[in-house]
Each structure stands twice: as structure tokens, then as C-alpha cells.
Figure 1 (cartoon, rainbow, N blue to C red):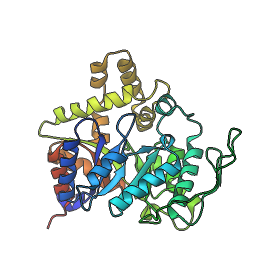
Figure 2: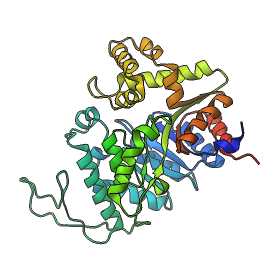
Figure 3: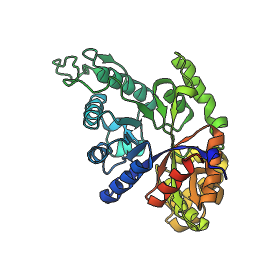
Figure 4: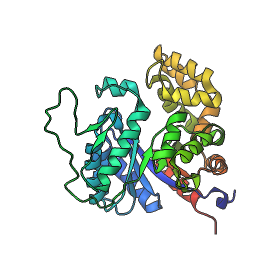
Length: 354
């Protein structure tokens, strides 16, 4: 297959930092050498995203540093502005801020704050963050979730509008929304610089999501469109000569996500896969997983779902899958992988033939 048909741009997602920072550093250095545009770090309720990125910033030169994604309910807009602009200065302007509302299990169970109305919270958060980074003056805001200065019934009355003490390196830091539901996707198109979807299907992007993006662009005005909006799909990757073995590695990942993430009545990933036509399979996976039959849950993940949502197997199979992404109109992928050989394969496939 002609590589010119497969020209793509790739980033690396290190996922949840866990206990292997040296491996993450080695992968990042490999990705930077291969020309990957960004490295992204996730967070849930373990290691945070910003601290590893600061460590990586000190040991890299050009690769962009993205959060994939930091949880809006975990930090005030002010704390996020302080952290993001500090890291941006230390890295010479390499920060990409991926943000998301997370789910009610983490928001209320871990952070101890109400899940509330995610769309309202996200819009207010982004508005305040942008004003703080722009540093045009002290920030005042009267919203439903955020009020600056705080003026609630238990307020001291001593709060006053403030602005960042330091001068950010950039007056604006790119914001990516990790949105999944239709309304959140539209909001991303309206207020963010890019969309950072998780478990996106190239076969359903145009039919299920494009109209919501267009609705958001229309609300934003000012000529905003898919042509000047950054879409980076997060895609799991396992490569190797044995296609079935690679699929099984991703089935274990998807089995956990579809079976064990969220709550039985609220799993955002099941909602996404169900929109692709896998609702019955998802229900079976979740029931098996929650009943303790985890291996059966993994085996219940359809091969078709694996091939639709991940990049797996030998070069020829991955090339075929990448062609589907290219045809969908999405040519930027952030690869969740811990395989140096996967990085090298993707870099090779993204390079146009001479």
C-alpha cells in the first residue's frame, strides 16, 4: 500500500503515569526523535497529569506537552491557570491543555464535589481560564458554578478581584475538550481550540458527530469551522505479527473500560460504543465484569469493535485501519501505547513515500 495514502500526524499518550516513569521517558524521547508532535499524560485518581509533564519538559526540546485530560472539578480555573502558565514558561510555550468533566463516580466519590451540570461548569471554567491567562485585568465572574470574588452566604466579604502576578509566556494556551456526548462535542466546537475524543470510531465520525461540531461552530461564529479546528483522536495501539494476540491485548483494555469503568447506570464509554451499534455486546460485557467473570467479559469484546476503535496487529492491518481514519477526515491520532515498535511503525506509515 502506498504510504502517501496514509500520511498522518501522531502524538503519544502515556496514559496514567503509574509506577514506570523511566519507561514513559524513554517512549517520549523515542516519539520526539521520530517526529511525533505531542506527548499526553492522563489522570484519574492517582498520579496527576501536570507533574509528569514538567519532568518530561526538562528532558525534551520540541515535543508539545498535553494533558489527557485534567479534570475540571479537581481544580479551580485559577489553579489551572497558575499551573498551566507555569509549565508553559518552563517548557518555552509547549503546553496543550486537555480538560474534561470526568464522571460522577470520580467527581463526587474522589473530589467530593457535586457533579452538577457539566456543560455549565465547562463553559464557565474555560471563560475564566482564558481571562486569567490573557491577564488584561483583575478577573471578576458571576456564574452558576464559579463566582469571583466568592460572595456566598459564608463569604468573609474580604475577597477582591485579582490577576496573575506573573506574565504568562503566551496570552492564550490551546484548550482541548475531552468530550464524548453530543452536547459536549458541540460545546467543544464552540468554545475550545480542539476536540480530544476518546473511543472515537472513524466509521461513525461523520454520521454521529459532524453535525454537533457544525452546531458548535455556528454558535461560535467568526468563521470557525472544521478546517481551523483541531481534532485529535485518542486511539489504543498494540502492534505485532500475531493479529489475534494483539486484539486480545486490546480486548483486555476494552473489557475493563466497558465493564469496570463508571457505574452500572452511567458509563460514558458504553454510551459511546452503543452509539456505534454495540449496545448488546456492551451490556453483556458489563454484566460479566461486574459479576466477577472478568475473563469472560474480555472474551465477549467483539473483534469488530477492537478493529474499529484501536490499531492492532501487523503493518498491513494497521495500514488498512489508518486508511479508514484518513477517509473519515481525521488525520491526527494520539496513540495510547507502551510499545517503541508501535511508535516506529506509525512514524513509518505517516511518512509519504518518495
